[in-house]
Length: 460
Ligand code: ATP
Ligand code: MG
Image 1 (cartoon, rainbow, N blue to C red):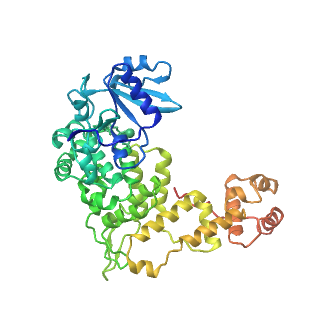
Image 2 (cartoon, rainbow, N blue to C red):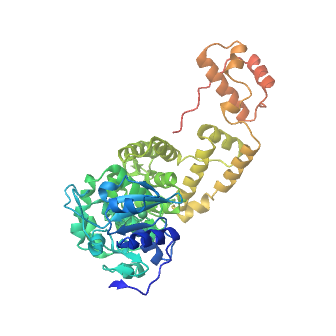
Image 3 (cartoon, rainbow, N blue to C red):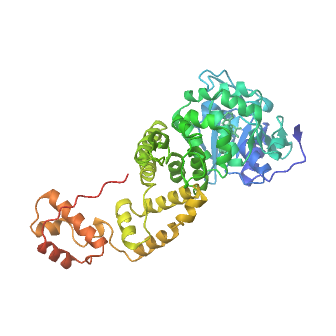
């Protein structure tokens, strides 16, 4: 363990330039962290970070010909722009005392790479590389990559107490990399999970998002449920909650995790899966005949999702999409033209297509018996959407051949009545009872001038 000159990493041209330039000026410099980890995993890193013995002011001076962004200066970081790509160059550092389980109070610069690596979270993230020295690996990161293991650098209890966000980061890296969490690290995460309450919601949701988009999250989350329920206590009652239904093969939590994993890697869809049945335990009813039901759980789950997403500081748009999907996840979509047009009108194309993905993932996590009885119809519905859109068929008020002005011209002056009439005409068009033709619609209006159909409910 320590330094291994044998291993060669192909550095991008710009990184070689940064390291060479710093070295020519008498400083040490290494590629460090995620880029070394991903190179050893034979993956192409997203971005390359460099650490150096040069102080930020010295680095800035050395690269003064280039565009430099100094936003991270107080943490010793400058961002160097080369050919429109950002490279973070950070002075070696050891963090000072941690107080609020999050941020170092002071950052002292030290001239020692080993101590810089010691403050990093996990062994796989605590390696450095430069062409002269080779891999610098004091904490066994290369072995942990080979054995697919997330393990704290140093004493896990101390490391999680310094910064509780690392608890979420451990889960996230394990999920994204497909690794297990080393036993001592895992037990200590659970022991310290209460400290997550000191972490800003935005930082927790940023980690949750990356975690949710990983490939194999079911097994990982199932193995570390107390961490998940620490940030989402509303999920706790789902654990082991039996559904007593031939349509379900798993308890609500297991079903939930399976549905998340079955969903495509799209954040709104995966969040919707995570929350879609969250109100089931609270809505459970057993009839005298012994039949179980969760009637109304969709609406309550949608309300709970809105509250959770708000608490975790998700943006309004994400919240609207996710709660809308949770609310609609139980509707039966009939694979016929008229029904699809009706749902297109209520939800819009994008949201209806999302709902298909939600239903597919939900069904994939139910019982074999369910799938035999209700074969997947989402592909047919998707094709019907294609046809309706391609043929520009009318399914919403904006496609209708008459508008409010036409109705005013036809003598309807009451605002509420205009709305009701337009919706009634739209429904006739969608039901294919009348053509979407201005003259024909106005004629129908003359024949039966009062329509009393209220606008459809809003599904988000
Ligand atoms: P990716 O960018 O692919 O998510 P990464 O490893 O680059 O992965 P970052 O969050 O960008 O992760 O952090 C860069 C490096 O900084 C990490 O590899 C790790 O060495 C260190 N690091 C980041 N956050 C922490 C933390 N909370 N505690 C300790 N070290 C950290
Ligand atoms: Mg990074």
